Amino acid sequence: MTPIQAQSLPIVLKGKDLLAQAKTGSGKTAVFGIGLLYKLEAQTYRTQALVLCPTRELADQVSNEIRRLARAMPNTKILTLCGGKPIGPQLASLEQCPHIVVGTPGRILKHLQKGSLKLDRLKTLVLDEADRMLDMGFHEDIMHIINLMPHKRQTLLFSATYPDEIKNISDTIQNDPADVRVEALHNNNKIKQVFYEIQKGERTQTLVALLQHYNPESSVVFCNRKQQCQELADALWQQGFHTLALHGDLEQRERGQVLVQFSNKSSSILIATDVAARGLDIKDLSAVINFELSPDPEIHIHRIGRTGRAGNEGLALSLFMASETAKVNAIENYQKSPVSIKTTSTLTIPEHRRQENYRLSPPMITLCINAGRKNKVRAGDILGALTANPDLHGKQIGKIDIFDNLAYVAIERPIAKQALKILMEGKIKGRKFKVKKLR
Image (cartoon, rainbow, N blue to C red; front, side, top):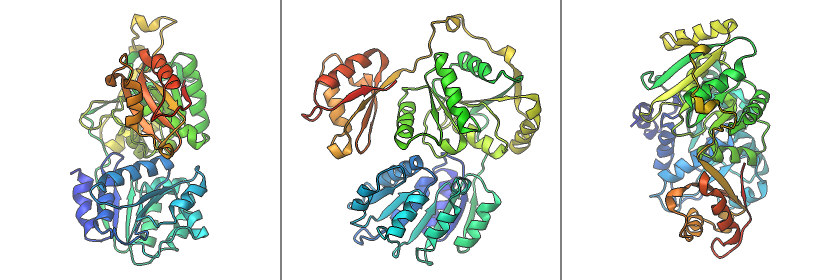
Protein backbone atom coordinates (compact mmCIF):
# COMPACT_ATOMS: atom_id res chain seq x y z
CA MET A 1 0.00 0.00 0.00
CA THR A 2 1.01 3.62 -0.49
CA PRO A 3 1.52 5.71 2.67
CA ILE A 4 -1.90 7.40 2.40
CA GLN A 5 -3.57 4.00 1.97
CA ALA A 6 -1.71 2.40 4.89
CA GLN A 7 -2.56 5.27 7.24
CA SER A 8 -6.11 6.04 6.10
CA LEU A 9 -7.75 2.77 5.09
CA PRO A 10 -8.05 1.33 8.65
CA ILE A 11 -9.73 4.57 9.75
CA VAL A 12 -12.15 4.52 6.82
CA LEU A 13 -13.07 0.85 7.33
CA LYS A 14 -13.91 1.59 10.99
CA GLY A 15 -16.49 4.11 9.78
CA LYS A 16 -14.73 7.18 11.20
CA ASP A 17 -14.59 10.59 9.54
CA LEU A 18 -11.27 11.41 7.87
CA LEU A 19 -9.43 14.61 6.96
CA ALA A 20 -6.50 13.61 4.74
CA GLN A 21 -3.81 15.52 2.90
CA ALA A 22 -1.93 13.73 0.13
CA LYS A 23 -0.37 14.65 -3.19
CA THR A 24 -1.81 13.73 -6.59
CA GLY A 25 -1.01 10.14 -7.56
CA SER A 26 -0.80 8.94 -3.96
CA GLY A 27 -3.53 6.30 -4.29
CA LYS A 28 -6.23 8.10 -2.28
CA THR A 29 -9.03 7.09 -4.69
CA ALA A 30 -8.56 3.47 -3.63
CA VAL A 31 -8.86 4.53 0.04
CA PHE A 32 -12.38 5.90 -0.26
CA GLY A 33 -13.34 3.55 -3.09
CA ILE A 34 -12.64 0.45 -0.99
CA GLY A 35 -14.22 2.12 2.04
CA LEU A 36 -17.55 2.88 0.44
CA LEU A 37 -17.73 -0.48 -1.37
CA TYR A 38 -16.97 -2.28 1.92
CA LYS A 39 -20.21 -1.09 3.51
CA LEU A 40 -22.34 -1.11 0.34
CA GLU A 41 -25.63 -3.01 0.41
CA ALA A 42 -25.90 -4.16 -3.21
CA GLN A 43 -29.49 -5.39 -2.81
CA THR A 44 -30.67 -1.97 -1.64
CA TYR A 45 -31.19 0.25 -4.67
CA ARG A 46 -30.72 3.60 -2.96
CA THR A 47 -27.87 6.03 -3.31
CA GLN A 48 -25.53 5.10 -0.47
CA ALA A 49 -22.37 7.07 -1.38
CA LEU A 50 -21.68 10.43 -3.01
CA VAL A 51 -18.26 11.56 -4.25
CA LEU A 52 -17.90 15.27 -5.13
CA CYS A 53 -15.07 16.29 -7.50
CA PRO A 54 -14.02 19.70 -8.87
CA THR A 55 -13.94 18.73 -12.57
CA ARG A 56 -15.62 16.33 -14.94
CA GLU A 57 -12.26 14.79 -15.85
CA LEU A 58 -11.54 13.91 -12.24
CA ALA A 59 -15.09 12.62 -11.76
CA ASP A 60 -14.69 10.30 -14.78
CA GLN A 61 -11.34 9.11 -13.47
CA VAL A 62 -12.76 8.40 -10.00
CA SER A 63 -15.79 6.59 -11.45
CA ASN A 64 -13.58 4.35 -13.56
CA GLU A 65 -11.39 3.49 -10.57
CA ILE A 66 -14.39 2.63 -8.37
CA ARG A 67 -15.84 0.48 -11.20
CA ARG A 68 -12.51 -1.35 -11.38
CA LEU A 69 -12.57 -1.97 -7.63
CA ALA A 70 -16.20 -3.14 -7.84
CA ARG A 71 -15.68 -5.69 -10.63
CA ALA A 72 -16.07 -8.59 -8.20
CA MET A 73 -19.35 -7.16 -6.84
CA PRO A 74 -22.23 -7.99 -9.20
CA ASN A 75 -25.09 -5.53 -9.78
CA THR A 76 -23.23 -2.51 -8.40
CA LYS A 77 -24.50 0.62 -10.15
CA ILE A 78 -22.13 3.60 -10.32
CA LEU A 79 -23.30 6.81 -12.04
CA THR A 80 -21.36 9.93 -13.03
CA LEU A 81 -23.26 13.23 -12.97
CA CYS A 82 -21.41 16.27 -14.33
CA GLY A 83 -22.20 19.53 -16.07
CA GLY A 84 -21.40 20.06 -19.73
CA LYS A 85 -23.54 17.06 -20.68
CA PRO A 86 -27.29 16.86 -21.48
CA ILE A 87 -29.41 16.36 -18.39
CA GLY A 88 -32.01 14.14 -20.12
CA PRO A 89 -29.95 10.91 -20.23
CA GLN A 90 -28.89 11.53 -16.62
CA LEU A 91 -32.54 11.73 -15.55
CA ALA A 92 -33.21 8.40 -17.28
CA SER A 93 -30.23 6.79 -15.53
CA LEU A 94 -31.47 8.05 -12.16
CA GLU A 95 -34.84 6.33 -12.51
CA GLN A 96 -33.23 3.25 -10.98
CA CYS A 97 -31.29 4.66 -8.04
CA PRO A 98 -27.53 4.15 -8.39
CA HIS A 99 -25.61 2.82 -5.40
CA ILE A 100 -22.77 5.32 -5.86
CA VAL A 101 -22.89 8.75 -7.48
CA VAL A 102 -19.75 10.63 -8.55
CA GLY A 103 -20.09 14.17 -9.84
CA THR A 104 -19.43 17.89 -9.79
CA PRO A 105 -21.21 20.08 -7.20
CA GLY A 106 -23.23 22.17 -9.67
CA ARG A 107 -24.87 19.26 -11.48
CA ILE A 108 -25.39 17.23 -8.27
CA LEU A 109 -27.20 20.20 -6.69
CA LYS A 110 -29.35 20.61 -9.80
CA HIS A 111 -30.53 16.99 -9.59
CA LEU A 112 -31.22 17.33 -5.87
CA GLN A 113 -33.33 20.43 -6.48
CA LYS A 114 -35.25 18.65 -9.27
CA GLY A 115 -35.85 15.67 -6.98
CA SER A 116 -34.23 13.27 -9.47
CA LEU A 117 -31.48 12.43 -6.95
CA LYS A 118 -32.27 11.53 -3.35
CA LEU A 119 -29.71 11.20 -0.58
CA ASP A 120 -31.95 10.16 2.33
CA ARG A 121 -30.13 6.77 2.62
CA LEU A 122 -26.62 8.17 2.17
CA LYS A 123 -23.94 6.50 4.27
CA THR A 124 -20.74 8.08 2.94
CA LEU A 125 -19.86 11.53 1.57
CA VAL A 126 -16.47 12.06 -0.07
CA LEU A 127 -15.01 15.46 -0.97
CA ASP A 128 -12.12 14.78 -3.37
CA GLU A 129 -9.65 17.58 -4.15
CA ALA A 130 -11.59 19.71 -1.66
CA ASP A 131 -9.11 22.61 -1.83
CA ARG A 132 -9.61 22.91 -5.58
CA MET A 133 -13.41 22.86 -5.23
CA LEU A 134 -13.17 25.76 -2.78
CA ASP A 135 -10.78 27.61 -5.12
CA MET A 136 -13.34 27.21 -7.92
CA GLY A 137 -16.11 28.76 -5.83
CA PHE A 138 -18.12 25.63 -4.99
CA HIS A 139 -18.34 26.26 -1.22
CA GLU A 140 -21.97 27.42 -1.31
CA ASP A 141 -23.09 24.54 -3.57
CA ILE A 142 -21.33 22.00 -1.33
CA MET A 143 -23.06 23.33 1.77
CA HIS A 144 -26.47 23.24 0.01
CA ILE A 145 -25.83 19.59 -0.95
CA ILE A 146 -24.80 18.65 2.59
CA ASN A 147 -27.99 20.22 3.98
CA LEU A 148 -29.99 17.75 1.84
CA MET A 149 -28.35 14.57 3.23
CA PRO A 150 -28.55 12.73 6.57
CA HIS A 151 -26.64 14.29 9.43
CA LYS A 152 -25.51 10.83 10.52
CA ARG A 153 -23.00 9.71 7.89
CA GLN A 154 -19.31 9.16 7.31
CA THR A 155 -17.54 12.16 5.73
CA LEU A 156 -14.15 11.73 4.05
CA LEU A 157 -12.34 14.90 3.00
CA PHE A 158 -9.23 14.71 0.80
CA SER A 159 -7.09 17.70 -0.10
CA ALA A 160 -3.68 18.16 -1.72
CA THR A 161 -3.08 21.42 0.18
CA TYR A 162 -4.23 22.50 3.63
CA PRO A 163 -5.40 26.14 3.64
CA ASP A 164 -7.48 27.57 6.50
CA GLU A 165 -10.67 27.10 4.47
CA ILE A 166 -10.18 23.32 4.57
CA LYS A 167 -9.98 23.33 8.36
CA ASN A 168 -13.05 25.54 8.54
CA ILE A 169 -15.18 23.32 6.29
CA SER A 170 -13.97 20.22 8.17
CA ASP A 171 -15.06 21.75 11.48
CA THR A 172 -18.49 22.45 9.96
CA ILE A 173 -19.29 19.13 8.27
CA GLN A 174 -17.22 16.45 10.04
CA ASN A 175 -17.52 14.69 13.38
CA ASP A 176 -14.20 14.36 15.22
CA PRO A 177 -12.23 13.38 12.07
CA ALA A 178 -8.93 11.55 12.15
CA ASP A 179 -6.26 13.83 10.68
CA VAL A 180 -3.81 12.12 8.29
CA ARG A 181 -1.11 14.07 6.49
CA VAL A 182 1.24 12.29 4.15
CA GLU A 183 4.49 14.03 3.23
CA ALA A 184 3.64 16.55 0.49
CA LEU A 185 7.19 16.70 -0.87
CA HIS A 186 8.19 14.42 -3.71
CA ASN A 187 11.23 12.19 -4.00
CA ASN A 188 13.88 14.61 -5.21
CA ASN A 189 16.10 11.68 -6.18
CA LYS A 190 13.63 10.84 -8.94
CA ILE A 191 12.99 14.41 -10.16
CA LYS A 192 15.75 16.51 -11.74
CA GLN A 193 14.69 20.09 -11.01
CA VAL A 194 16.37 23.00 -12.82
CA PHE A 195 15.53 26.72 -12.75
CA TYR A 196 16.49 29.01 -15.66
CA GLU A 197 16.85 32.75 -15.12
CA ILE A 198 15.56 34.76 -18.08
CA GLN A 199 15.25 38.39 -19.13
CA LYS A 200 12.01 40.15 -19.94
CA GLY A 201 10.53 39.02 -23.25
CA GLU A 202 12.54 35.78 -23.39
CA ARG A 203 9.97 33.38 -21.96
CA THR A 204 8.61 31.81 -25.16
CA GLN A 205 11.98 31.55 -26.94
CA THR A 206 13.49 29.96 -23.81
CA LEU A 207 10.65 27.44 -23.66
CA VAL A 208 11.36 26.49 -27.28
CA ALA A 209 15.05 26.10 -26.43
CA LEU A 210 14.19 23.86 -23.46
CA LEU A 211 12.00 21.63 -25.62
CA GLN A 212 14.71 21.37 -28.28
CA HIS A 213 17.47 20.73 -25.73
CA TYR A 214 15.70 18.15 -23.55
CA ASN A 215 13.32 16.82 -26.25
CA PRO A 216 10.84 15.30 -23.71
CA GLU A 217 8.45 12.69 -25.08
CA SER A 218 5.58 14.29 -23.15
CA SER A 219 5.42 17.48 -21.10
CA VAL A 220 2.88 19.62 -19.27
CA VAL A 221 3.60 23.36 -19.37
CA PHE A 222 1.97 25.38 -16.59
CA CYS A 223 0.75 28.95 -17.04
CA ASN A 224 -1.02 31.06 -14.41
CA ARG A 225 -3.72 32.47 -16.73
CA LYS A 226 -6.04 30.65 -19.14
CA GLN A 227 -5.69 33.29 -21.89
CA GLN A 228 -1.93 32.77 -21.87
CA CYS A 229 -2.41 29.00 -22.36
CA GLN A 230 -4.07 29.40 -25.75
CA GLU A 231 -1.69 32.15 -26.89
CA LEU A 232 1.34 30.04 -26.00
CA ALA A 233 -0.13 26.93 -27.64
CA ASP A 234 -0.70 28.90 -30.86
CA ALA A 235 2.85 30.31 -30.75
CA LEU A 236 4.40 26.85 -30.28
CA TRP A 237 2.20 25.33 -32.99
CA GLN A 238 3.53 27.91 -35.47
CA GLN A 239 7.05 26.76 -34.61
CA GLY A 240 6.29 23.13 -35.41
CA PHE A 241 5.38 21.72 -31.98
CA HIS A 242 2.17 19.67 -31.72
CA THR A 243 0.73 21.56 -28.76
CA LEU A 244 -2.70 21.52 -27.10
CA ALA A 245 -4.13 23.92 -24.52
CA LEU A 246 -6.38 22.97 -21.59
CA HIS A 247 -8.27 25.80 -19.93
CA GLY A 248 -11.70 26.84 -18.69
CA ASP A 249 -12.90 28.42 -21.95
CA LEU A 250 -12.98 25.09 -23.83
CA GLU A 251 -16.25 23.27 -24.45
CA GLN A 252 -16.51 19.99 -22.57
CA ARG A 253 -16.18 17.98 -25.79
CA GLU A 254 -13.02 19.93 -26.69
CA ARG A 255 -11.55 19.29 -23.23
CA GLY A 256 -12.19 15.57 -23.58
CA GLN A 257 -10.57 15.51 -27.01
CA VAL A 258 -7.47 17.37 -25.76
CA LEU A 259 -7.02 14.89 -22.92
CA VAL A 260 -7.48 11.89 -25.22
CA GLN A 261 -4.83 13.16 -27.67
CA PHE A 262 -2.32 13.89 -24.93
CA SER A 263 -2.82 10.63 -23.06
CA ASN A 264 -2.59 8.47 -26.21
CA LYS A 265 0.65 10.19 -27.39
CA SER A 266 -0.93 12.02 -30.34
CA SER A 267 0.28 15.28 -28.83
CA SER A 268 3.51 15.79 -26.91
CA ILE A 269 2.86 19.11 -25.15
CA LEU A 270 -0.11 20.09 -22.98
CA ILE A 271 -0.34 23.69 -21.79
CA ALA A 272 -2.63 24.15 -18.79
CA THR A 273 -3.55 26.19 -15.74
CA ASP A 274 -3.45 24.62 -12.29
CA VAL A 275 -7.25 24.49 -12.13
CA ALA A 276 -7.59 22.80 -15.55
CA ALA A 277 -4.87 20.21 -14.84
CA ARG A 278 -5.95 19.30 -11.32
CA GLY A 279 -6.75 15.63 -10.89
CA LEU A 280 -5.72 14.58 -14.39
CA ASP A 281 -4.52 11.00 -14.59
CA ILE A 282 -1.37 11.43 -16.71
CA LYS A 283 0.99 8.46 -16.61
CA ASP A 284 4.67 8.43 -17.65
CA LEU A 285 4.98 12.21 -17.91
CA SER A 286 8.54 13.01 -19.02
CA ALA A 287 8.67 16.65 -17.94
CA VAL A 288 6.85 19.44 -16.15
CA ILE A 289 7.72 22.97 -17.26
CA ASN A 290 6.73 26.03 -15.25
CA PHE A 291 6.36 28.74 -17.88
CA GLU A 292 5.51 30.95 -14.92
CA LEU A 293 6.22 30.22 -11.27
CA SER A 294 3.23 29.80 -9.01
CA PRO A 295 3.06 32.35 -6.18
CA ASP A 296 2.37 29.42 -3.81
CA PRO A 297 5.36 27.07 -3.22
CA GLU A 298 2.97 24.24 -2.25
CA ILE A 299 1.32 24.45 -5.68
CA HIS A 300 4.79 24.39 -7.28
CA ILE A 301 5.57 21.11 -5.48
CA HIS A 302 2.17 19.76 -6.54
CA ARG A 303 2.93 20.64 -10.19
CA ILE A 304 6.34 18.99 -10.38
CA GLY A 305 5.06 15.87 -8.61
CA ARG A 306 3.32 14.89 -11.85
CA THR A 307 6.66 13.67 -13.22
CA GLY A 308 9.00 11.05 -11.78
CA ARG A 309 6.23 8.65 -10.74
CA ALA A 310 6.20 4.89 -10.36
CA GLY A 311 9.98 4.73 -10.05
CA ASN A 312 10.61 6.63 -13.31
CA GLU A 313 13.05 9.52 -13.66
CA GLY A 314 11.33 12.92 -13.86
CA LEU A 315 12.30 16.36 -15.13
CA ALA A 316 11.01 19.68 -13.74
CA LEU A 317 12.07 22.91 -15.47
CA SER A 318 11.12 26.42 -14.32
CA LEU A 319 11.54 29.89 -15.83
CA PHE A 320 11.92 32.99 -13.67
CA MET A 321 13.11 36.59 -13.90
CA ALA A 322 15.26 38.34 -11.30
CA SER A 323 12.12 40.09 -10.02
CA GLU A 324 10.71 36.65 -9.08
CA THR A 325 13.65 35.61 -6.89
CA ALA A 326 11.42 35.79 -3.80
CA LYS A 327 9.26 32.98 -5.29
CA VAL A 328 12.35 30.84 -5.86
CA ASN A 329 13.45 31.45 -2.25
CA ALA A 330 9.99 30.46 -1.00
CA ILE A 331 10.21 27.16 -2.93
CA GLU A 332 13.66 26.45 -1.45
CA ASN A 333 12.36 27.14 2.06
CA TYR A 334 9.31 24.96 1.52
CA GLN A 335 11.23 21.94 0.16
CA LYS A 336 14.07 22.54 2.66
CA SER A 337 16.77 22.32 -0.04
CA PRO A 338 18.37 24.69 -2.57
CA VAL A 339 17.39 24.58 -6.23
CA SER A 340 19.74 24.30 -9.22
CA ILE A 341 19.82 27.56 -11.21
CA LYS A 342 21.29 27.68 -14.72
CA THR A 343 21.51 30.23 -17.50
CA THR A 344 20.02 29.71 -20.94
CA SER A 345 23.54 29.71 -22.41
CA THR A 346 23.90 26.13 -21.12
CA LEU A 347 21.16 24.92 -23.50
CA THR A 348 22.54 23.23 -26.61
CA ILE A 349 20.44 22.21 -29.58
CA PRO A 350 21.60 19.33 -31.83
CA GLU A 351 22.24 20.39 -35.41
CA HIS A 352 19.43 18.26 -36.89
CA ARG A 353 16.93 20.12 -34.68
CA ARG A 354 18.15 23.52 -35.89
CA GLN A 355 16.97 22.92 -39.44
CA GLU A 356 13.98 25.03 -40.50
CA ASN A 357 11.96 22.07 -41.73
CA TYR A 358 12.53 20.03 -38.55
CA ARG A 359 9.29 19.24 -36.73
CA LEU A 360 8.89 17.59 -33.34
CA SER A 361 6.06 15.23 -34.22
CA PRO A 362 4.34 12.96 -31.69
CA PRO A 363 4.51 9.22 -32.47
CA MET A 364 0.74 8.72 -32.82
CA ILE A 365 -2.23 10.25 -34.66
CA THR A 366 -5.80 10.08 -33.32
CA LEU A 367 -8.75 8.96 -35.43
CA CYS A 368 -12.22 9.98 -34.20
CA ILE A 369 -15.12 7.61 -34.90
CA ASN A 370 -18.67 8.93 -34.73
CA ALA A 371 -19.92 6.05 -32.55
CA GLY A 372 -19.55 5.00 -28.94
CA ARG A 373 -21.05 3.08 -26.04
CA LYS A 374 -24.59 3.98 -27.04
CA ASN A 375 -23.94 2.35 -30.42
CA LYS A 376 -22.69 -0.78 -28.56
CA VAL A 377 -19.20 -0.21 -29.98
CA ARG A 378 -16.35 -1.66 -27.91
CA ALA A 379 -12.59 -1.31 -28.18
CA GLY A 380 -12.33 -4.87 -29.50
CA ASP A 381 -14.68 -4.03 -32.37
CA ILE A 382 -12.44 -1.18 -33.53
CA LEU A 383 -9.30 -3.26 -33.12
CA GLY A 384 -10.89 -6.08 -35.10
CA ALA A 385 -11.97 -3.76 -37.93
CA LEU A 386 -8.41 -2.46 -38.27
CA THR A 387 -6.47 -5.72 -37.93
CA ALA A 388 -8.76 -7.52 -40.36
CA ASN A 389 -6.50 -5.87 -42.94
CA PRO A 390 -3.31 -7.97 -43.12
CA ASP A 391 -1.17 -4.82 -43.61
CA LEU A 392 -2.01 -3.54 -40.11
CA HIS A 393 -0.70 -5.11 -36.94
CA GLY A 394 -2.06 -4.79 -33.40
CA LYS A 395 1.22 -3.32 -32.14
CA GLN A 396 0.74 -0.34 -34.50
CA ILE A 397 -2.53 0.54 -32.78
CA GLY A 398 -2.41 2.48 -29.52
CA LYS A 399 -4.91 3.49 -26.88
CA ILE A 400 -8.63 3.22 -27.68
CA ASP A 401 -11.04 5.48 -25.75
CA ILE A 402 -14.80 4.87 -25.89
CA PHE A 403 -17.31 7.57 -24.88
CA ASP A 404 -21.10 7.68 -25.11
CA ASN A 405 -21.28 8.82 -28.74
CA LEU A 406 -17.64 8.95 -29.87
CA ALA A 407 -14.60 6.70 -29.94
CA TYR A 408 -10.94 7.60 -30.40
CA VAL A 409 -8.15 5.31 -31.56
CA ALA A 410 -4.43 6.18 -31.64
CA ILE A 411 -2.51 4.94 -34.69
CA GLU A 412 1.23 5.04 -35.36
CA ARG A 413 1.90 8.09 -37.53
CA PRO A 414 3.35 6.27 -40.60
CA ILE A 415 0.21 4.14 -41.10
CA ALA A 416 -2.44 6.66 -40.00
CA LYS A 417 -3.65 7.42 -43.55
CA GLN A 418 -4.02 3.72 -44.29
CA ALA A 419 -5.94 3.13 -41.04
CA LEU A 420 -8.24 6.08 -41.78
CA LYS A 421 -9.03 4.66 -45.23
CA ILE A 422 -9.76 1.21 -43.76
CA LEU A 423 -12.24 2.61 -41.24
CA MET A 424 -13.88 5.02 -43.71
CA GLU A 425 -14.39 2.36 -46.39
CA GLY A 426 -15.04 -0.58 -44.08
CA LYS A 427 -17.49 -1.37 -41.29
CA ILE A 428 -17.43 -1.71 -37.52
CA LYS A 429 -19.80 -4.37 -36.18
CA GLY A 430 -21.38 -4.50 -39.63
CA ARG A 431 -22.14 -0.76 -39.72
CA LYS A 432 -20.55 2.24 -41.40
CA PHE A 433 -19.62 5.24 -39.24
CA LYS A 434 -18.05 8.61 -40.00
CA VAL A 435 -14.34 8.76 -39.22
CA LYS A 436 -11.95 11.74 -39.24
CA LYS A 437 -8.33 12.42 -38.36
CA LEU A 438 -7.69 14.92 -35.57
CA ARG A 439 -5.00 17.48 -36.27
